[in-house]
Image 1 (tube, rainbow, N blue to C red):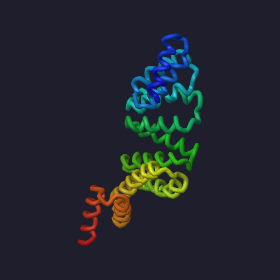
Image 2 (tube, rainbow, N blue to C red):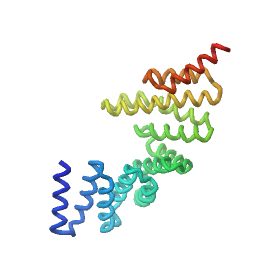
Image 3 (tube, one colour):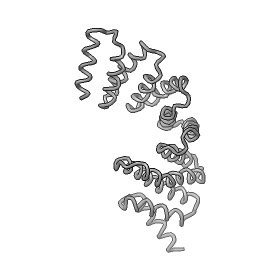
Image 4 (cartoon, one colour):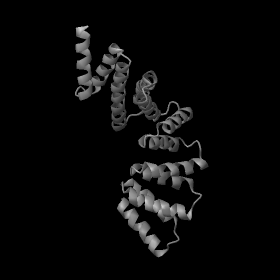
Length: 226
């Protein structure tokens, strides 16, 4: 399907190089099949001829992000946000790009802002989870616990509103990670009973989770000795 579309758009450009929309459509087509280097090339050509087009910049930023070129994605997202400062997905992706390069303060600012835009959106799960990770890395375990628990609270909302097995499975994997991280956060503040509780919740989703099993075994042995 996309191969035919790509050939068609390329033929149009050979006939008339001024059919600039073909650059945009080629960028979309290549992005759909995961060829992000090609997508970036055509999005950049589209933007060269249409510098005021916001969505082209957003999609270019996404292509950089999907290609793991997070530092290149950031300025493109920022350009688009000058056009539409409340675009939720762009703000979310910008936060995740900052997170990927280790700029936790800017990532936190973006995630916090996303939660003001759509506090109950399904992707707020990502905000709470990564905010929990940020706080955990900073040694702010009580704050990490608060964010991870928000992931737990979103579980019923996600299951009620999304029927796709793939989406539910993805979020269950994130929930499992949240439970494991809750166990680790409670362990850091020496609340071993809660730590055991959340490691067990993690294992209810995947009984073969190696680290959860190891940590649970250690804590159980410690409590037996006590």
